[in-house]
Image (tube, rainbow, N blue to C red; front, top):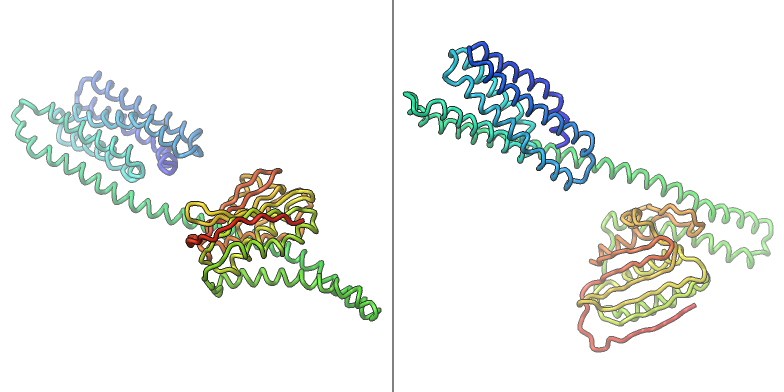
Length: 436
């Protein structure tokens, strides 16, 4: 519709000129002036109404939702039908009432009004059918009116099939053009979408490189300082050793995350699918993550229903651990995190609830993108680089897990992982743990 409006408005003036040309031919052929002027007035009125409608669309509807655009299209469609009927009725002016040369000129103008806008109008099937059908059928009725009861009445036996053939041909041409234009616009849209995705990826990678350089620089500088300190004071290894270990662990953690992403990209991740007791996974995570949460002043609670699922225990543990780590990173001391599991409609749901800073609604669609970090004014999670949740998304895809996230800014976040089919197991039990 936008493309049609852009091209159509610039040619309305040409349409008005053709209207005057048709009326001029009629006057020159001694057709009563009032008939020619009446037809001209109706044609110019239709042209003006179309101009106003298309200008209004260009001003107010171009960026409107599709539903509003379609509703507006339905409202202005009668204008195109009216204009088509007026042009079809032009046959009442010239058919059988002028010289052969004048009739030929009039038929040429009418054919121009029929075929010239076909390429543009075919982009909008609703308007095309009204306009082309209106011209063909009204001109056919006009010819029938002019010859009915006269000596040339028999000519209708071939005029009607020819007119219907013209309509069928126009519809065929329009369908082919619409298909071609649809393919063209589809390619343009795909290219534009790919360009936007590529630009976004470049920006994300640039943000990641800046964050990675910043986060790697600190432990690397620390390692350098510790090495110099040890060189100067060899007896201080007991004090400096744990600090070197922590700095080395920070660098290793970054490298491991990058290697994980690279393995997913190259398809090198191998899964070991086997029956897994959820209680063992949850219990193990609680005892590993619990001390980390406690060190941050956060209470980790577990409310889990045991179940038996077929999955990769290691990757499942990594997926849930990354979500828990993200929740701890973005939660303030004194808050709680709940790790829960339950069976729902034959599937296992693992949920992580936190009372952290939350995520704005417009940021939620991007949180699982690689290298994406939610901009926040808080000092929480300065070391985050936007890798953790992207790994969660990759792991969820590998484990055929549906993952959803809901959040309220300033109040907290809930991440839900729906993990596979649950095997029947009468030994299901509930686990209630509170660590911290």
